[in-house]
Image 1 (cartoon, rainbow, N blue to C red):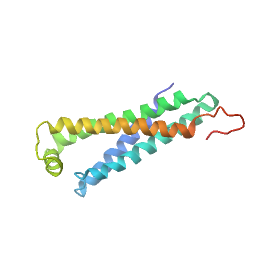
Image 2: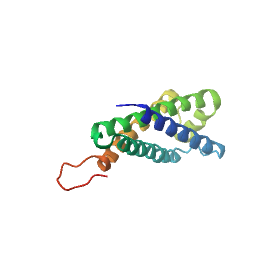
Image 3: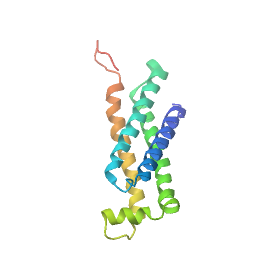
Length: 150
């Protein structure tokens, strides 16, 4: 499997995630974690499109495994890049971000940085896995005679 396509979609998704986060920060909404639910929409769109384009590129050679790998690589690339950005943003660019976030959600700041970075990464990986499995139900080939796949 060639990884260029899912890596490109992963980079585009991470750019969209970063842009969305920065737009929220302009309005002071980036400390409200409920806005992070839209990250799943951004990541999901990128995964869906990557799998769709992979299926178009491979034609009849497309199978569940290649689609699944495409989705995972896309989401994992987006998650890793966004997590690195998030860590740099909160420790170097806006050092008041994590204390502000912790006062909103937690009373204790001990080890909060590590917990937040870990949570951001795990949420991205879990979202990637669930969405990839879901989208592959749309793109997989059917073994039933006479049925058509998407």
